[in-house]
Image (cartoon, rainbow, N blue to C red; front, top):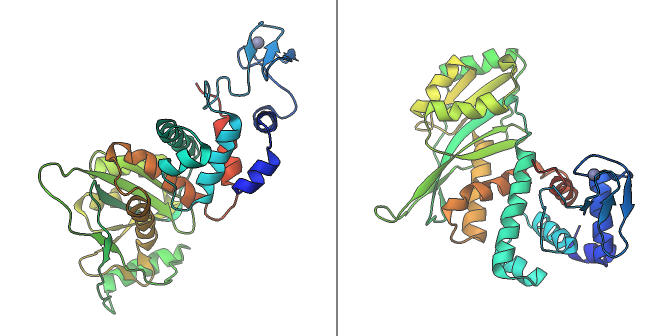
Length: 327
Ligand SMILES: [Zn+2]
């Protein structure tokens, strides 16, 4: 929903509150303190009074946006602006568009990224899954494409491809995408970097997190948490990094040696590489200088947008997520 539609649909704060109430409770309002349905409306404000426990509450009480000082109309505008912008927007733009202080806009945006992570945690990967890691530097430069030729015949990979194809995995060859390497980075003092690990199901969802290191122990957490428990239903594709080699002990695994090639007859990690390209575009293109302390939050936004890329209900999802109970 764009800004004009939002301002037409929710011309007053009351309309915005009603909308959030619909998402939180449907037709029956329930006290968030004692779950009673004996509720009466207070006329002087938009709060409710519970006749059972005698407390009052609003639609945001005990939700993810509990205690917000911003109007719910502003939240709706922020949801609209952010879900409309593929690459994300800057906190500065949010400040201007909502007419709020920069610091408030910055905090609000991070809070919205936290909402996105609630949905991200529910994803589940299976079938053909690609796993990879990426280093993000504070002073990230534009990505430089590198190309390597693909050898015409690699018997070992032919055998593996045939073996898994017989088991029902279909490796579509698709268009060859040039992978991205980041160059010209500042090294030495002051240069800091963080590592992200990510996994994606072909034609499916992605998950990515900032990781302490790229050891097998750290990377397998992603597989253990997000991949179908029935491991036979999944084949994992990775590059030849040493920490990846142990995956064959826990899951069907094909290694693509990137020193030799990036793609071989549909065996590649192109999908996760294209997700890294999105991360790069967001960081280079939008947030010119990302404080990598908050990298995990930027990653949350990229994951959420990637997983919702095919449907147009990000705005609705954000309202639903805002109304999730806060423990
Ligand atoms: Zn109550």
